[in-house]
Length: 444
Image (cartoon, rainbow, N blue to C red; front, side):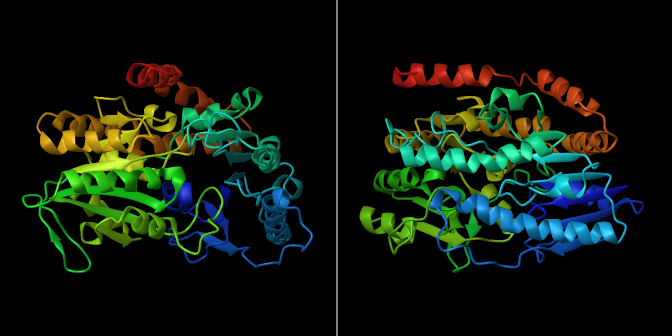
């Protein structure tokens, strides 16, 4: 079969899918991307559409994302037209077009079915826009910006034959009319490669050796250090934990860039601002930057506690990977997380906005690791049962091939629903989130 994939940062969510398809010599797989140097399986044709074009001077800022996406989409369309002239017609197009890159795919290939990845539909209320600080109200500019950005997702949706998203939470933020055509299916993680390992600490790149006998190793991972992932809350908890626990050391992975929200107007990164503001001891917090995957797993395995926070937003891959590694999880009680784990079963949850509660929960698991050892076991078990790529990958392939055959709704969609029913994955997580907040904080 002929497969056409579109992802500006390919392979992205398609890593395991591409490998499986490339393993079949009868398949022809082409990837359109702006990251041609990323590692992809052998046998895949990579086409780069990353040529830069300066944006118009008089462009309204709310339209920048749509217009930038349209420029990229034009380059994608030209590449597809060239492929078509050379005789390549895909049986199916699999696209993550959240930036607008796939706007014109249906116009080039009107008879080819499209499976679109619908990662997030922006809402001015009830998600990241009005979450932090508590009581925040989205401004008219916030509302206008998010509404305009959603034009990209509407185009993607109406161009697609079927859609996919990794969590129920992410599907729930889409308009009700759209949800009927969106299957919930996580891409999964390699639970054989990412597994618990009993190690005595970790050696850091600067030569520092942290031993679990002499130190308390606390880990934290973000792609970029920013408020969407609670970095400002995390750092305030670091200050408290350092003061309370002289043996505590933090090993932190991530960069100073911006993945979500708007860039700071400060000349310093958020990390630099908070280090200075809070006067945190730099000898006891180790920022390792971005490291290779194998060493990243070693960091997860070495931690005696692992902290994860998120706004009501897209769930990080690292969170599922921390489950697979059997980390001792201390997490914010926000919807994406509470869909996956239960307080006291796989993790200890805390109010996102409370550094005190975060610090308190970290101290609990460090003071009595045996008492909370079942959380590690249950976290690993959850990853094995619900997020094992070996179980999820066949469903992804089946879904893609159903779409290629013009089967809509796809037969695989029903099998995916049955899997969720088996594991009790439904809207109950929304109720549990509300119940937890009511119980712990007295508010809904």
